[in-house]
Length: 115
Length: 116
Image (cartoon, rainbow over all chains, first blue to last red):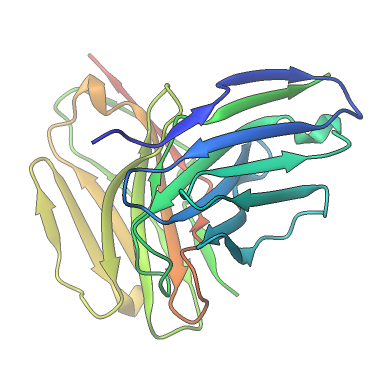
């Protein structure tokens, strides 16, 4: 079974631009979560999608948004990029969205550098 | 508020030594789940174990073992006879049943370096 795939793997953008990252979950998994990893803040939860609906959201500004498609694939978008948005963005998939109980399997991440 | 603390920032051991990674958590929820993930240099987080708050049995999987103690809010991870391939960053994480979804709150991680 193929794992979680994320594209692109690396991205360099300029401050003020916007970016879209893509995530394809494990086949059969219907929930997709996004996390940001930085040296200073560590791993932080961005949001989770299940059945094309955002189920939970972390403490990030509105510049960070996402969506999920009917095939469970997900995209996240960051508008008006800031230098502080440079990070590894990790996508995780799980079978369903329960109450904390489902294991999440992570993709290799997209490393975003904002200059 | 939920919080996970991994006090050990970095640990260095020589191959074949045993090593324990500490994890202390805070939650007001009575039902919660604890996880350990491994992040090798490639960056992908690898799932190692999930434990629910009602199951305090220790678990062993090959060279890996986990000790869950609710009384001290700890969920420690031991690697027996460490190998160079165990070198990675290890994260402990918590999710609460009170909140819908699978949101994980991670500790800061412990860098494990195993030298040959």
